[in-house]
Image (cartoon, rainbow, N blue to C red):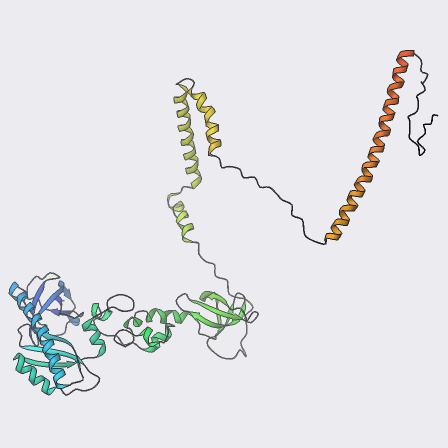
Length: 438
């Protein structure tokens, strides 16, 4: 085990190990370290710690000192010198008519070396440019050609996700990315959607590649012949993230159904013929979705603490009854107030009740043939008149019989005999209008 500290240089995300030489350095402190090109100003990102000897690249460079106020001022002067060098170099490039784009300028801590980073489509002859820059700055000049991904890392920016670029924020080194990753993740192959601001494939395609590859091992391929709980069929599409597949069943080929990966029994993985494939008689079991989170949240306390909701509700009702009884006792001690409250209580309860809405039912007559309806109504009226006439005649006869019985009873009480008194017949109007007697 070796004691080291981790430091980062300006504009870099990669950390390097240095020997503290007995110094105690805290994270965030500025230090002066020894490098192959001389002393450099760096930032400590991890304090003193122990690492394995195999993880150290020898020789391990030492830490010269913790940065002082003079070191900080020197670093600020170097930053200003870099800005001036950037402007002068752009003018020289335009004067020499070179097809190159200046990206960044860096100066070492002691100012003896200046590095110019640029991008170009091909090779550039910048020998005359180096001579002019050396005469201006009186220092060692170095020009380095970098790629477009390094350009994005140095300049920085925002990706399509709205976050700062990964390469300028935390990536130590660039990862290899291929178009096969985009196909595996079922992404659109439109270059504008899967490319970063550097024009290359986005580095974040590599982040989820392992998860997609693991899910693809558990899911069958497209056009596979599978057995489902509803019968055999062929897979038309696969959703790797949800681990679901759409299957076109043999019984209903026009309406594909979606199944989970556990509901599928692969009979042939990928394209091919069905000849010689035996379909098992037993079908896979149907997937049963787990309970919803709401139900789980309601039931999760019952097995832990061993109580149910009903005793709690009963206890709350008992407490409510006790409070009501104590309130009634207090009101009863005041005299007649209890009676008034008792009488007012039903009225208050009635006022709190919701109003009853009465719904009137209206009979709707179906439209049809008006002539047939009129005939049926006329027949009903005629039959009603005949029945009412018969009822009238029967009631008239009953009235006559009751009147004759009453007259016989009166005659018996007056004369004491049972001789029936002759009754004059009722006058009836004949066709000639003459009165007849019988």
